[in-house]
Length: 76
View (cartoon, rainbow, N blue to C red):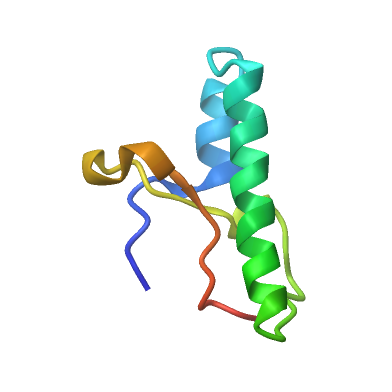
């Protein structure tokens, strides 16, 4: 599993930056989360403890185009 330098999504990034983030970015975040959950489900797993605190954020520059990631191999 990759290190998520930004920590959890809900408590840190969205809370601190909600006003500055435009709606396109907010929808993009939700879409990436949905894609991650779909990938988990397509492999026959269920997360069982899904909430904003379990959505990890990667703010590294090399991953700039896909900042918002659901960790697919971290199943509870």
